Image (cartoon, rainbow, N blue to C red; front, side, top):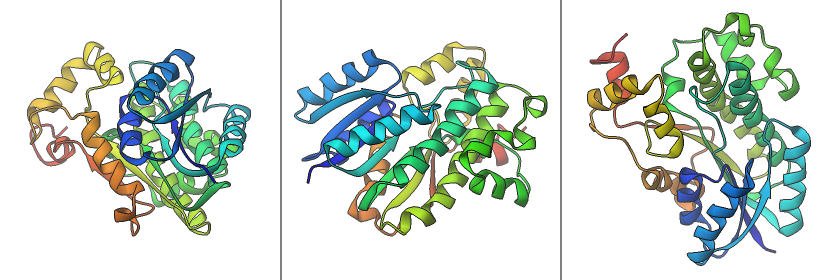
Length: 274
């Protein structure tokens, strides 16, 4: 049976991971924008991959379920790279919660029902999840195991409790890693694995929006104060993604990998300390 790698969010990071794990498999590129999926499909097709495209709105259960049905009509779901999301400079807190938190929970639930044995998933979270002060044990558990359709009703996620889009983004990305830890138990019953990567500033169109936006000065300061003294590249995230999705990562599940060039270390213990 054909093995399918699903890339949700056809941007630079999703493509970088896909190039490393999709040889001999069918790649289905899904994005909210047809033009983004088509552009990524041309790039991967020109590189020798078998590719098809689909449109998906991760904040819609009907849309995500339709994507699952399309994938399973092609073959078995062997891998998912979930890289769809919006940044603080691109959206309101409400939209960020709907796409980055609820959308991730929806993808994990729907694809966790069909993932193949020995299959794997990587969810792209963010260093921003590490920028949030500690939540209570009860809040962590609520983010991890609340049923998907109840998730956005949690009291501490209500808009009157949220300072701004950045705060919503931090909560969403912290939530992503907690969701994945809990989902790893369910996926494990199918013989599959799921992990998150929390990148720092990686040069993508989304990061460029942030660098040019109201938080641009803060981003540049993060780079200057980091150990690496530079931003990262999608290929570097791709290398970690390939480890987590491949046989070398067979003992890794329910884990989050922070790769930010030392920005978080500088935030809590160095020049960026608030």
